[in-house]
Length: 395
Ligand code: GLA
Image (cartoon, rainbow, N blue to C red; front, side):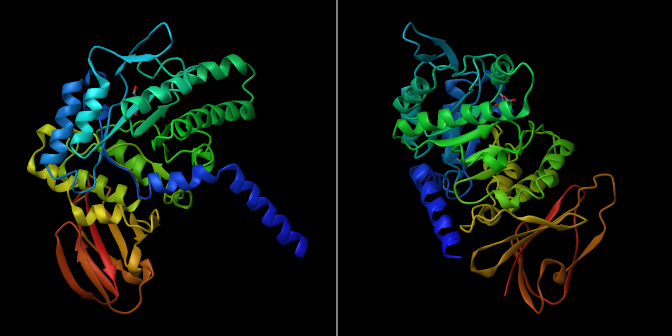
């Protein structure tokens, strides 16, 4: 017994020695799921300096910054060429990264950037392969606060070194590539949130924290349609044990306001992502939001579920899609989804015992912004097609 506990103590000490700064820093950097905006879903490779400044302006004017959305993240297509010393420069869409960064910071926001461990990014731009520390230093000198690091052409590097497709070698090389950039970021001494993007392959949620990830994509790219969003969102069931303060599952960015779904469906994305304690990275044109889009992205009661300080990712309770998330103070959020889009909306009854509640409980509808009084045993409500009813329940 004594030997076993000594061995456990020894193992814990080794772990602490190996990852002391990384884990404490990780937790501090992303204590709750990161919130902000990313250029990709709306602007793709056309994004410019002016678009990013407009996003920053709109983040403030719309009230989103004050609701917690602070990262302004430039995705792929900012990259230009390397100079003779190997330093990366932005292309002519981004004439002065330092000035852009200063502008974003002057608004009380933070700046994010994108690269790949491969020689090329997914869009065919310059990646960080062989220049990891140099690039990390450049980002830090620009005042970057967030890096999305996207696998892309790194798989070609792996194939060169592993022509026989030895799965263990592939995995080890991928982990090493992400760990390398993490170390490079740590070496800059600038706090930079580290977002892994490799589409969820090889159970990234199991090793993401080890390589310094604050968040990691769990799936392939989202599209602005209900099928894509629902498939990605609902497939997160079972991953809840891997998320927590400092390290989050990332089911990709929000499509709210991009036009491919209706308001009920976008409310489903906002609710499901919040139940999942997922990063909330808006992916629309913030400078052209209608009132409905704003009301969804700015629902502070739903945001509070996502950002709850316990940092527990919610889980599916059972079919039809009932999900719950424990909140601080003993409360819980419960979301009821009607994911069948071609059915009539019919009354649905939630039996409180199914979400572990016995006896009377206070309830509030987080989309209607309405107290429902005290519930006893069950609650019957009509959920719109493709939509959601989201409740907060407390004793
Ligand atoms: C991949 C990522 C996307 C986006 C593009 C950019 O597809 O998954 O989120 O970053 O690359 O090229």
